[in-house]
Length: 285
Image (tube, one colour):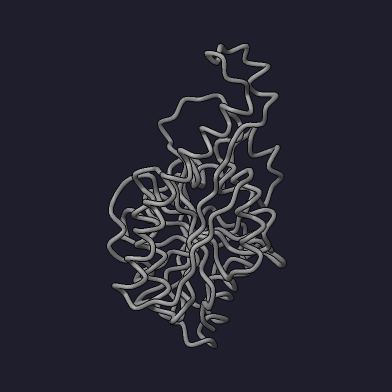
């Protein structure tokens, strides 16, 4: 298996360059077509009327046109950097500039790629906007493709040399392993981790993660099965702690085994990983 189409979301944030570097490295490794997507996401005119703002004589339509013009200029610089990366690394690639709501647009374009590369939302943003994770969650839940989230901070010098697979014997985890197979097959080391595993028929079996390790072995992936018991911290925090101890450069995880509403109220592994990731995470639902 190999990745053939990689979509990367590029914008004006400082980490856009890092996302481009990660996506370009993946494209180079797999001989894939790299798609750079920049989205002009403007508010509708009702926003201005509702805000009761003064426009110095300009109506909402004129303000939007100015905003659109500024965004096009900003995207031109991003496009130049994208084409420069494609040229220098001798990749096949294309640039897309479109207008619309960013999360939904990412999901739409993501359906025609093998993987969607996005950025982790700023975890230090104390905004109460419940949609600030949408650039990760919407393509994850709506595109039918895996999403690779790049952390808000830190270096991403390598990707996929040592992979940690979060395994809980669920449908989502099985889907994540399958979606990540192109990366797992190229990894130098793969560790499969079960956190607080429940043994028994239909769950983990006698040896947690052993069955999925055997499945991977048949694909030529040498994987080590491990489990940990951590009752004093959440499963997500235990997973991140284990990843830090091992020094992995990629986590593979199934997303939203529980409903998103339940995770919003009670918390969950997906929510913890999106908020607190320190290495790239490949999510699949």
